[in-house]
Image (cartoon, rainbow, N blue to C red):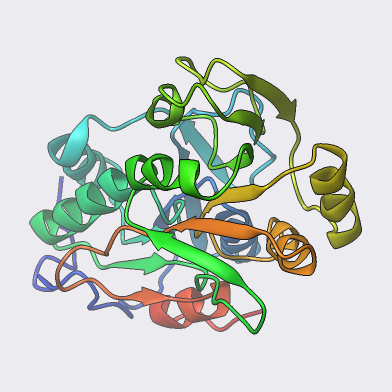
Length: 268
């Protein structure tokens, strides 16, 4: 196979290679932004887009372009895939908490010389009236809960709930797209739902379940931000798990337009 035309670009964020016929972009997906980016790229006849999904959701939403499901086998596996499939650019549009995938993508891009960029929606910011308690992990969130309330609305996704399993005095309402993985806290009700959610709906849910405290990850975006407004309206404390930092030397663009610009592609 001929060497990649980008092998002389060692830096992870050195983008804007020349877009040519068959220009192949790998999108590491699983977010709304990834779907929007894939649609924009697939609309161009000179660009081929492949979206990779981790496979954690059994019924993923439709994607434009090609789709592959499953892991790559770490940094070396991803680097091999980039070479084998002659990838010209990588866009990491995974969830802000997918730290392992982001690290693997950064290392694989550097190892192969394939330009790459991280697409991350901006995080949430507290406003007047918010009672936020920022923490660095789910374990820190669990340690804080006994001092904040008895009835907990837990919206951190279906993974990692073992951090709360030892809290026997609290009652939990856990919301996720698919059934959470055990172990779970002993007093747990599960609500399966996919956003976007409305402020009115979230306020009603918090009242109905007599919630004292909300726990969330700083996912950012509008689809699940309504719960933060509802909690503020009701004066409830919110435990916010901070995002993991990006790998050293890696920067992010905040939206699809920024990613297209970094790829050297005019937004539609």
